[in-house]
Image (cartoon, rainbow, N blue to C red):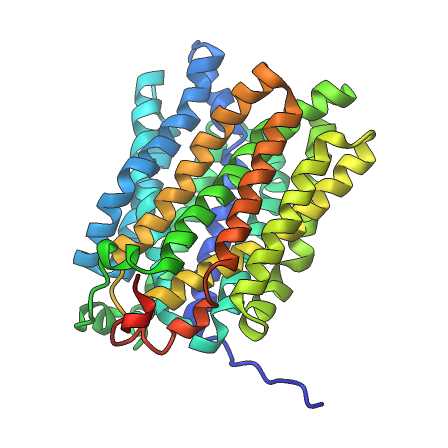
Amino acid sequence: MPRRRHTPLPIEVWALVAGAFAVALGYGVVAPAIPQYAHAFGVSNAAASGIVSAFALMRLVGAPLAGRILVKLGERRTYTLGILIVAASTGACAVAENYTQLLILRGLGGVGSIMFTVAATALLIKVSPVDARGRVSSVNAAGFLLGNLMGPVFGALVAGFGLRAPFIFYFIMLVVAATVVWFALRRSPLAGAQADESPREPLTLAMSLRIPHYRVLLGSVFVFGWTSFGVRVSIVPLFVAAAFNGDAAVAAWALASYAAGNAIFILPSGRWNDNVGRKPMLVLGMVITAVGYVAFPLSPSIVLACVSMVVAGAGSALVNPGQQAVLADIVGTRRGGSTVAGYSMLQDFGGVLGPLVAGVLVDVAGFGWAFGVSGILLVLAAVGWASVSDSRTLQESTGTGLSDTDRT
């Protein structure tokens, strides 16, 4: 049987992936330093953690604004403006004189962050070949993953220059990302100025909400944010400390195991989403991730706990490209700023709410309930994907509007 030839990915995709890598690398360096930097101003631990929450909160509340800006300015300009706002706020953080300034500056950075996140997602949709949307999503996710994995390595070197140095490093990486994407896309017929200004049919949020696939997608990304961005980074280290008397280094092994499972399957997942379909990968990925999360607190040893995290990471690798590919199938060639913003907003909301609810469940009922509820949510998301058709059936209608059979 002849091997299927894949559509070559355009240079615009690789420019956006390079930008994603630079942003993730810089964030991986600065993230561990943020609470310590805030604490150096003499505030409490709660206030130091509030710096992280302020960034996440402003991403959440800024999502609707980001969608409107995207419609008005276009994807490329919104990406550049958003990333430069984060760069400016990050550079200013390096010379902040008190906690209040730091809090305000990080909050402003959150607004810029959601702007370039929404714009980057919309740009990837815009420049992706129709038959390679899954591959594009997986390659982009791999760029973020590689940057996140290399971040702590660079962070250990940069930290030697003081607590302000990571902010300067992140500032440089953000400027690099903005420069690469701006110049690589400025003459692009797919994403450059002419494409930004060309008339395209709008896809409003109200229109998207009438599409069953989009409603399922919102629930899915909320659960994904809850588990992968929330519970994983907040409750997993707490469980390791409580169950295995593990310190930060041991917890890091558990988180690294999740990253390993993700890294192994993230690139194949994109191909499978394009060749086999979004629906099978999303249903299977949600179920596998649920198994990993439910098994984790039942693990009798740290080795088996790490194996559970590898399973959860592998499941998430099947889910992540599929979700973005479904979004691309829904938006197609239309201008869908509010649709993309809604997608990002629900994912951020899950990432903010997940740790809070899981933390309460741990205090009230124990770790088993916190991970069990997460597993139930993942299974419900799988049921949601099983209830709709494969989103690739929407591709024929995404350029000129939805047919009646696509609406409910």
